Picture 1 (cartoon, rainbow, N blue to C red):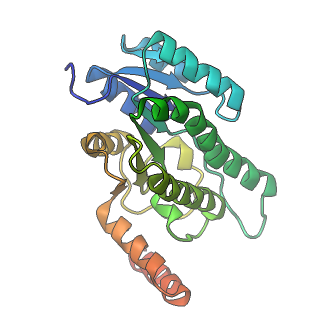
Picture 2 (picture 1 turned 30 degrees about the vertical axis):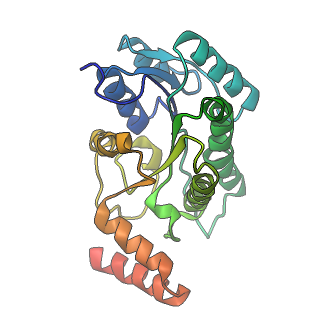
Length: 254
């Protein structure tokens, strides 16, 4: 369906992943030209070949110079980037009995520095045009601590703060920021999480939820709603009360 969405060109990093890959397909089906970026892989090759509106642009989000070159190439071949979805990320288990310092550093590097590199590659052109939309993939588990999520949660807390800061700075520039905060999604990314997962949704349903609201350019898209409200309430409580609420929630949910 042509012109289903308000963007002409979308750049998606982490496009070889389940969620962003499905978002890419849905945007392409809606007539958007999609630039799909991830590290070179069969998955990226596959998504780049399955739809005429999707073009693969391999790059590592940790390589700032390569990303800037990628952004310039996309603009030259597809047109100005209207929508940027910074979706590259990873999850490493956090075990207090065997703290993986290297894994923590790797998580922070990809989930935070990779996002910042991505934003820095596309934002200048958007500011120059006074037009653009940036979506950052956060997580509900960036709002408060959660067992087993010490590294991943810390990285997503940084993204939440980054989004809040950008929202203040981008006011009246013509560039909008959206923070996308899903809960547990059934993907390979969090398959190594050893705790019980609550309110799990499929990548397809997640992508559908994102694209239902993203055209309206809201500051945040957070779901499932009941989990989002609970964790934001926990965040607003005194520390001891908030931790007690989390323990009670985990116990009640089994």
